[in-house]
Image (cartoon, rainbow, N blue to C red):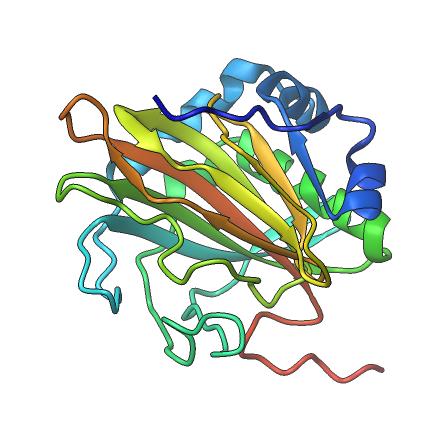
Length: 251
C-alpha cells in the first residue's frame, strides 16, 4: 500500500498570503465553496462535462490515456467573457514534449460554461491573482482533463515536472475513480524545497505561482485491476495576453 500524504491546507481567507509566502496554496472542498460563495454541491453540476471529452490526438509518447477540452476566457474584475476559440500553444522552454505545437481541442461544452458556478469560480481565482500581482485583466485557459487507465498506466503530466509559462495555475480535482497513484509534487524553482501530497476529495484546489514553482503529478494505475480515471480542471491565468500572442500595446 502506497502511503498517501495529506496536503497542507489553507483556509479561504489565507490563500493569497500562503501563495505569496510559499508559492502555493491548497484548499479543501468546503474552503473552495466558501471562497467561491456557492454551496459545495453546486460544483457537482459541472461534473457531467467530463464524461464527453474527445481523445487527445497530440500525445507524442504514443499514449491513448488522455481526453480533454479547452477554451479561453478573459476575467477583468467582476466581468468574465469567453474569448474566441483558439489553439493552445506553449513554448519548448516550458513543455519539452508538446511545446511549439498549435494544438486545437474541442471547446468546453456550452452547458458547462453556462452553469452559474463556472464564472463564479473564474472570478474568484481572478481576484486572487489580482491581489497577488495587481488589478488587471487575466487571460485564462481552461483545460478539462480525463486521464484513464484503460491501457494500464495514465500520465497526468507526461512532460514531467514543469512550469506552464503563465502567472498562476489552478489545478482542481474533479474526481478519482478506481485508481491508485496521482500524487502531486511541487518544488521551488530556485532550490531543493518541495512537498508531495495527494488530492483525494473532489473539488480540492491547488493554486500555484508559476514563476517560482515547478509541479508534476505521478502516473496513475488501475485499482484492483479495474480501469479507472482521474478528472481535473486546470485553469491558467496570464497577464497581458494568451500564450503565443503579443501583449497589446499600452495606450
